[in-house]
Length: 337
Image 1 (cartoon, rainbow, N blue to C red):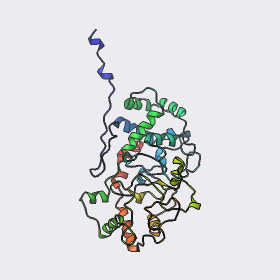
Image 2: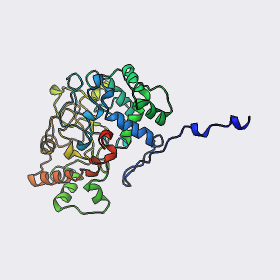
Image 3: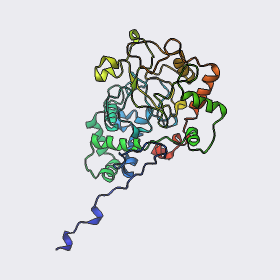
Image 4: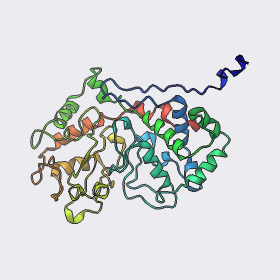
């Protein structure tokens, strides 16, 4: 009898830890202990599966394309019913170092971000009741959720938990810049000049980029009004819509400049189609408004970069493209490899 009461070792639930590959020059993180191989594989499958949307029309990957650093080439995304979102789709990488999401930072976790996107009537228009039914009735998903979370009934909490685990594996840190930073190669004279401009105050001598886009993540992950519009042209109030603080009008989250070559159009509304336009916006100095960031200190005169300076700055920005990241099969659609 004593023997028969021992736990059945074959039925003990266990998962395999997923070890994130953190670049040595990146900040340390403390939230990787809950990531498992089973959860990541499940999240990857869900990320590419239109089953989460109304009528199975679109997936997360429809607006977050790996070859474009998990962004998309349209200014505004089109949802399942043909409606357009009001903002540009943000890229997805290095999310472990972020503590808020969306251009206005209105949620504080990847799970909340996924819940909102799937439920949005403009985007995926998914009903969690219907999604749960589809997943529980699916020939594969019940076993995958059982393996990842030891559950028999699939609900939204575990769906977004799995997607979040996959998204945490999207780490980009092996661009030409990173190899230069690690001493594995040297920059051309033009690229080196661009790197110098990036890290120096303007006008005349620098491009003032480093204040908000410091290496190695190339974002400060906070919110700024970068002079896109004057007060009378504020069409999107950004962070203000979350905080209701008048000083936050037209402030948006700083996007990472990593892979910027791959992620046009630029800004929260996709107004700039090219890097040259972005550089010229800052060179011009921006539009004066009541909430303009103090870091935009060259209003009026601008940065005064000449064409050679602008070309050098662009050359440096192109070194931030991570070909290994956008071709990593572990991040690709599992149905095709």
